Image (cartoon, each protein chain N blue to C red):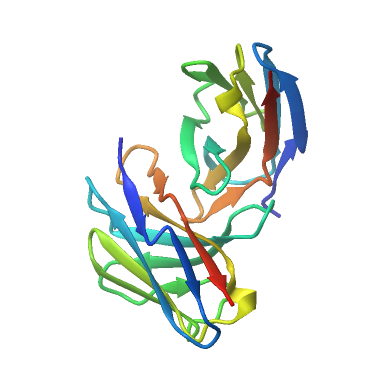
Length: 116
Length: 112
């Protein structure tokens, strides 16, 4: 099956620093990738939709200047949390959409961000 | 409003027993329905995906059903194992857009 990787799996940073999370589709090309955020015992919340070669589309309430998304190639999208604060601590999950009859999304393993 | 509701919120069963999780949705227009398993601290992993024309689909000990008329789906787990302990998420896709509508999940705990 299609595999999506994320790096790093865990990151701890100081308040005010920026953190970059990578999402890669390993064995397929994904023109569209999605970034989600998940709080403990809560459902995934879509943050933004990333299309290769164009600007990301952010969901209402998500600050585009705080969560910078770059989708420079068909296999890589990055999410940068700028000037991170403790309230940004969360589980960040990406997914990549493969072209199929279902347009199925394959999820990465997630990145646990802790901001001190 | 597009919504996906799952029940029960949590469930505890003994190893070896069967269980059924429920999903009701109000998403329209409907494209497909997916069941995912999410282990703690991991990303969701797809179990099954069904369009409106598919009534049932199996993946090993997991069997999903779909009734597009009543907008209900179920996930049946047979002969549960300790490794089945996870959150099971029902996700519905609409033809109206690319966004997925997530249920809040059912947390299953299998004990020995």
